[in-house]
Image 1 (cartoon, rainbow, N blue to C red):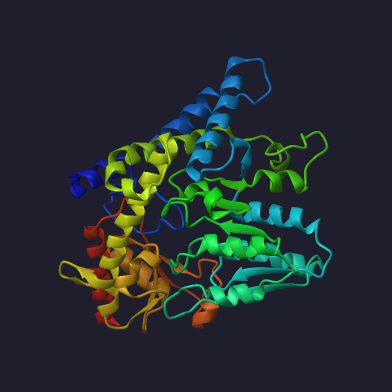
Image 2: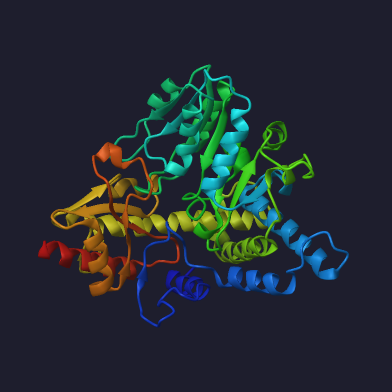
Length: 431
């Protein structure tokens, strides 16, 4: 039987800054939605590649060839992580925001001005503003927003389906809300888009560290995520269905080959970023090998590295539900978010439905500004959380401008949850 404490100790050993920051101060890190802690394997692989294979591509020199190999290996690793058709369906870029803008630009070349784009009411503005820009330029007629239910944070799928029609060019959605943690019914939304011939675009930035992803099973045309939200360094990646990548015409300079992924990638690639992602997949493959037997009934027919990567994320998803339940119900002598006086929780608050959310919790304390709550949690209780809008449209539905967010992943523990909840309870009493 798998001993959870031993496993968590092994997992945490893979993240050099898990227990304290570089100054040596012990702390609980609950800001992974803004940028996760970096995996040791990813950092080592990136540093080695950056030092040893810094020569640009295209030389006959050995180091140039090895740089090219690092890129090929990185694409293959991400292909397996997403179960994509090929490494050539993986495009790299500067940021998810930048990639979504370039995607919208390419799609706008196929529009006539009378189309619409459907997004959700809890999307990050990185997945709203590019489509709104098309409306501003007259490339489409309008952007439509699918409602979500503020009480439980769940997307109103019926309302979304009603917004999609024969003039819908794109249906874009967050796989998981980065503000309130709601998991979207991605496969169902992609099917709705496909039925009218619209492109489906998934913002998976907050999705990739929490649940296993199979882009072929989901049926999405495009999926974008950030490397630094997945235990790696700055940079981003976009999966594109091979036919869609080939048929669209992104901006490119004339000499760049007119085939994917090259035609989507302006300028020289960073081999070290790809090496870092290979390091992440090495870590997840290691974890998957340990936990595979515990989730084997949930893995279907996957084989090899793909199976181990899916096992790691499936285990993480299952484990994170226990963290979400602890956040809501409490742990040890610490009351849960639902029981702390003056605390308002946004999104799902039902402990029996924690599988519908990621362990990302947005809340406010009545009478105390969000920034002050975050500051007190850090200064008085050594817990790192963030207070802002998180660039999310969700706050329009709550008539708020910002909140405090505690965002956990599978390297966090119930003991750390207890530390947060104790601190929050003390802060609430002082309000």
